[in-house]
Length: 547
Image (tube, rainbow, N blue to C red; front, side, top):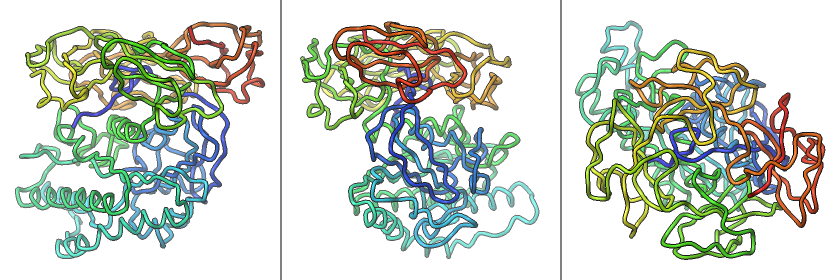
C-alpha cells in the first residue's frame, strides 16, 4: 500500500495550515485541547485516544500541561498533525502504556479513563489501542534485551498473550461502542500499529532469534486482524498503518519506527517523525480532507461548474479541502463533494494539472521502467493529480503492481522528483545548519521530493535528530515558506492596511505557511481583529485573494 503525501512532508502538495476560532471540546484532566490551524465546522470536535503509538514518546516537542509529560505525549503525534492540517478541534488524551481498560474504565495515574473526553459534540475519534493488552512492545523489548545479553530483562508470558488475543477484538468493539453511546454521530477511526519487523530476517539493531521473530510477527498479524475485525463489526473506519508500513520497518533504509537501539531521547520500537507524518497522511486520507495540493488551479467559485478535459482530481474548499475525481466537469458545491469542508466560508474548486506533480519530470510511461538518478529520490506514479509515491533508487517498474493503482481506469506515468524544496519554499539552512524560524511556522527538511516537516518553536537545527531522516543517504536542506497559501496567490494588503475588492470573497490572512480564512463583502481591514485570531504571533502578515 502506498501512502498519501502532503507537500511539506513526503508529498507533492503545499500543506497550508491555518488558524481559526471554533467550538472547543471541554478538556479532560491531563488532556491537551487546542484549536488547530484551519477553518472547521462548529462542533466538529476531534478526540484522540490510544497508547504510545498514538501519543508519540520521544518526538519533540512534547506537550506541556497537566498529565502530558506522564503520558509522553508529543505535539507532533499524528493527531496533532491532523488537527493542524484539517482544522479539527483536538482533545488529545493519548497516553503511553494505555490499554483498552484505560480507555473505558481505569484511570492511568492522574488521567481518568480516556472515554471521558468524548462528549455529545464529538464528531471524530481516532483510536490506536490493543498493543499493551497483548504486551506487544513489552515483549519485543524483553526479547531484544535477552538476545543482546542484557540483564534484568524480564520474561514473556506467551500463554497469557495468546489467551488475551481470544478477547481482544471484543475489547476493541467495546471501545467503539462506548464512543457511540456518548456521541452517536461520531465517526471512529481505528488506527492500527505500524509494522515494526521486516517480513524476513532481521538486522543488528533488532536483536531477535528466529523463534522470537516468528512469535512477534504473529502478535503483529493478530493485532492487525483484531483491529480489522472490530472495525467491520462496528462500522468504524480502519486506517491500516500495518500494511502501509511494510518496507518502512525498523530495519529498512527509510524506517517509520525506531530500532531497539535508537538515538538518545528516542523510544525503542516506536514511531519516529517520518512515521507520525505518514500516519497523519493516512488518517487525513481516511477523513477525506486536507490542504490544497500543489499543482491545482482554480476552476470555479462555489456554486459554479469546474470544467476540464479528461479525468482529474478536483479540490473543493477554502483552507481545508475535500477531493473527488471527476471526468469532464463537476459542480462546485457541497452536494458534489459529500459535505462542507469549510463551514461559513465561501469556497472554490481547483483542478489538478494533466501532467505530474510540480517539480517532477516524466521518467516512464505506465508499463515501462523508470531509472532513478543518483542515490535516492521520490518517485510519483499516477495521473491527473492522483499519485502514489515511493522514495526509492535504481530501476523501478512503472506499474500498478509496484505502486498500487492511484487512478483507476486512467493511463498513468512515472515522474521523478528534481532537486529543490517543496513548491513555494526557499532554503533556510543546509543540513547541519540552523534554520531561522518563528515559533509556529512550518519548516520542511529533505531533498528530491521527500520531506519531513515540523512546527518550529524558534530557530530550528536542520538535522536528522530534529526531523527524522526522510531520505537516507542524500544531502538535505531546510526550507521555509513565503507568499500566500496554495489557491490564494494574489496579495491585496499588508497587515494593518485595507484589502479592497468588489463583491464577496474569501481572504487568507497570515505568513510563512500559517493562515486563517474568512469571507467578507466589499473588502476588509487586514488585521488580527478582523480575522478573529493571529495565525503566527510576532510576524508581519499579509492578506491574499484567489487569483
